[in-house]
Length: 263
Length: 231
Image 1 (cartoon, each protein chain N blue to C red):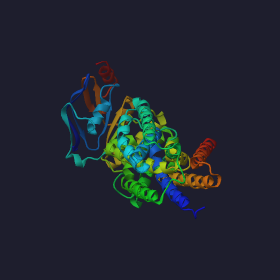
Image 2 (cartoon, one colour; image 1 turned 90 degrees about the horizontal axis):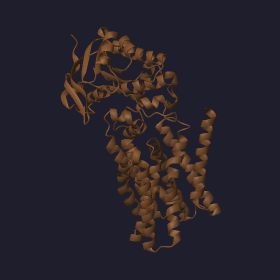
Image 3 (spheres, helix red, strand yellow; image 1 turned 45 degrees about the vertical axis):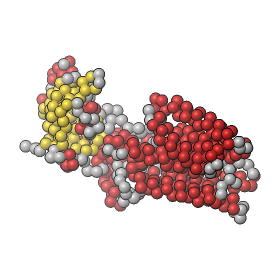
Image 4 (tube, rainbow over the protein chains, first blue to last red; image 1 turned 120 degrees about the vertical axis):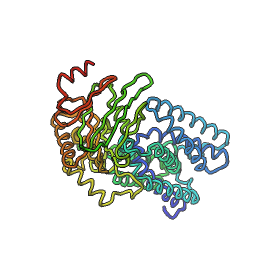
């Protein structure tokens, strides 16, 4: 299986995605941003469709749309009273735009399914290199702001009282999230991105109780899902995103059951 | 005479529709244990926000002595977003306050400091328990330990005992009183609980709408409390 270049690329990309998603997911969960992450992925769909319409790589269109909108969506969703409605409005608009761009680009339906649900064969070596650069940027930024982000995510009141630059942190985090969404969408597709950015971290928090250990375990859960999903997809020719979704959801439900049994 | 650490000079604060504090002057001395009491809505939390410099007084000024840099504030807020599923252990929660551009992991010295505070707050036995599953008293002690992490010389407890049972209240305030007496930590305790204020503090500041009264805690009689509440 690994003698095929497309599978090598898929495994390299999948590994990067699992690492980024596992770590970022811990902060997504702590900051209650699962819904916002889902919206960013839909914006990513619009961006990828725009990229195709413009004749670019879909990933570049995704990066453009998610990065610009991450800040705006974050601001819209800042007030909890209007968060759901504001984010739903942006989601609807993004999906509409995505459909429009795909229609204008005159592409076939398989292109759209590739963006929405991910694909194993669509990843080139150039994609992998670009994803490596993006992932390295995200990881490096995370290392630099880690202690601040940890405090602000897991104790926002304490962080505010201590005079942390919480607003700037929030903007930096949203940009990192936009990058992560764009990277992760390459395999699982934009519609299922929140599987990797939320479920592994949501499951990890039932087993370990430090931020570092949660990030480590979330990466392991994400790797199990991505690696196994890629293998099963190769063997069965079924969509990889189905397997990854099923494995991650399975891990999450097991975690819930273990927690229920413990308590 | 003790040195002052905080001075409020004719401080007033007005919201667009309401003035909550008017011309409040008070000097807090180093090592004091001050209780700020008063009904809901008289401006206790607003006053604390001015001390924390989250709000600016409409008039007057809040001064730290001898200067702002000499006063490190530890603040234990009234509310925290800790639900039963909150995952971090008590130990990890306390260490959150070590924010800075440093290694992602805590250094040996930092871990030792967290260990000292766990011992100080008698949380060592439950240090690895998720904070979400801790009792109300344990949570308040963890908040206190986190506030003490960077060695404050002024500690503010904002209604920290409000949701605790009598045993947990006593445990928490015994701990704070011991820090006040052993280390000379200056304490501001915001509370509704007059008996608790009488038991632990040595000074009081009683806020009522538009006015206030301050003095040694021994002067805070039941008659005075009744009179102030009816003012």
